[in-house]
Length: 202
Image (cartoon, rainbow, N blue to C red; front, side, top):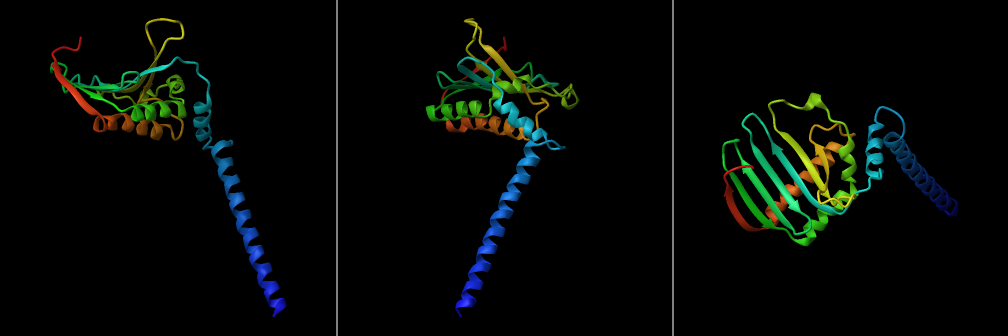
């Protein structure tokens, strides 16, 4: 009976060792695929982009815009990160008046956006090349604009634009889309404070 129990203990220990070894090997293979050379190395490029150092001033504003299709549409969501005022503008056609709505955004939601800007190092994404083959000439221009305080003591902010037809590394498009959804969701989370019609875009 004693020998039988010893054998069972040995079997259990062996199974545990095999299980742990399998997990370690699986993780090593996964990491080598994601970050090492090979056809999926673009995932590693995303990590490099997020780690790239780009000096910039304090975040001032973030804006998502879709504009300039065949009808001359305008659809923007702009958040002032200093005041917490979010402004939307919409016009279906170039000749239409612009519907403007303002919201007050909670500080916790502003902090969430700033955290995403830092976490993904989005200012560095503005240096990515654009993919003109993915840009429809009669379609709208969609982009994310990040404004930061000028490092040259200029009153004009430094602009970092990330276009929807950018050549994103693998996984980059998903992050870009998620951040835009976060910005759009602020409309539902904010407190509406004002709305008016603007007759001209200029």
